[in-house]
Image (cartoon, rainbow, N blue to C red; front, top):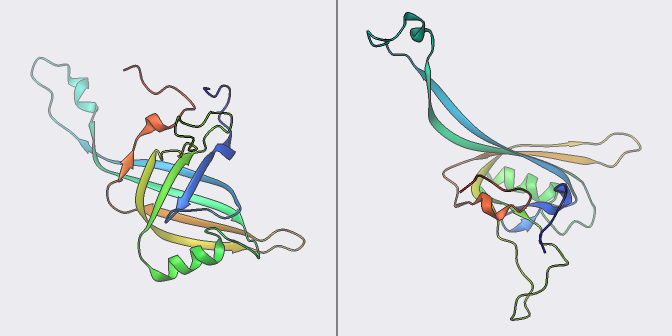
Length: 167
């Protein structure tokens, strides 16, 4: 069964080294392109005003991710303590972004539940881990990731929320 309507944020998940982000309240993914201007003299047949416009060329692609969640005493997923430990180790972690399967979808013919395929998998460096402990509020954590290297998987067709392109 195809999903309809708006994409619910609860259905878009993030894992760190194969483990879901613990007690997540949200995440933001930003795909970046660093560009450089290229100026060339217009040909003799072009009007002078053409020289006022530069071409932009892409020099580098990258991604950044920000995730937020609530600290939980009995955490079993990638929560604040785990993320802080990973940050301290100063090594890349593998992030995967995946859309949760619709629970109403039937199992495959073998009787095994469908496992969602990630639309983006890449190594990232944890660049920031912070927490906010305000009076009479749940303690929240906030973590930033910056991509390192090319993605292992980048397949927007694994997002069912909207049609991408007209191929």
